[in-house]
View (spheres, one colour):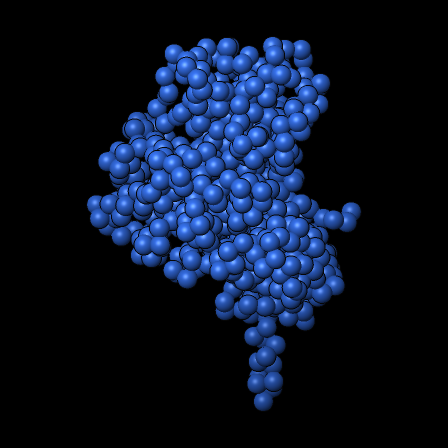
Length: 557
């Protein structure tokens, strides 16, 4: 009888059996925990030792893990969720004027002039974040920059990073004239007589950007500190860095040094370039990196490639022309070249992520992955398609069939002025109605990982969840949401930012859920986002971010 009476208590203490002799470093009690674990969806408390969870369960059971030196944190009934994972993120390395939300040429110029006051005389003036709707008739032109900067070079990149506007001084330095031919995978927009308008699309931006002085080692260190600090404040514990840099230089060195010193504030899954024509030596190097960096803080093993551009630049590759045009976008590779490249990387055991926004590019990516599967057999490759803004309905079931990750960006569904007056009109109503529709991927049974594409959009996960759930702007427009059939629930959005994003990086056994034995990555929130009207989600704030048992952010000292 005594044994039967003790059985419930023994069950509650089972998570501690692996190391019951050692007390927890910290326990967090009196919480409302959404674990992301289907076997134990909820809990009241967590115990942490050595950076991992040693108990997840009821308050009384978890308190049993405490010792004399254990730190006990009472969370006062706050909602706790697994650490947020941004599945598509870029480290900004260059200081630039912030043009996001400028809304007009006048404001763009004002911000550039204000930023330029801190620079040495004659230095390049660079900025990022404009959209076509900031300019009259949605047409960016060098004349607007020339008036304010007649002799000083200016280069401003659009919000999406796929087109840039250069003034005449910058074009002169770059020797871009009417006689300059369009580079491969790029377009120089031209006016009368073939004269460049200053608008450079895709690879054509490199004609001018190559002249902008690169950031220094100190610049990189500063940005790394600032950006990871900002990520921690937003509850982010891991990023999939999608900048496809070669594994060398200041960024590579800074990450490697931080990992070796165990001073990282969040976890990194870093991409190398996908290039169908990569040398054998490059592929060997990429595989070596994957084998070398297997720790929980820094990992390699994924290759990022670009298949097309963006809708706003009319460079996303479409099966049918953009509305009221003959243009179908700009695929960066032929199908045969892409297929050969995917087969090479797949054979090397590297995961591939392909930027594909238009339906033609998405189909090309899926076809290439299908070809690699036929050639090499069914494997746990977890190849990915990034963005997938305008997929063909025909292709949606193929994500599950091929085991391909749908890597989408929740905040892309924001119906701001650019979306409503440039993006949607270019697509036409039929395609716009299904663009950035996250429900269609869930309904098709795909694994969908959410990211931000920061700095294209803010890396604010709560805002991303709000957008996916409401399809409204932060101001609450339009009422009922933009094409509301694409909305998903809060719990689905949470899953895409945690468990599914972990799976997309082969990390689902360590992060993305709160389960005994997993890494102690979690976020404490000010309000219960699972028990409030969706329209109020933006009032939720991050109070505490814990990664590997370390508090990377706390709203209170």
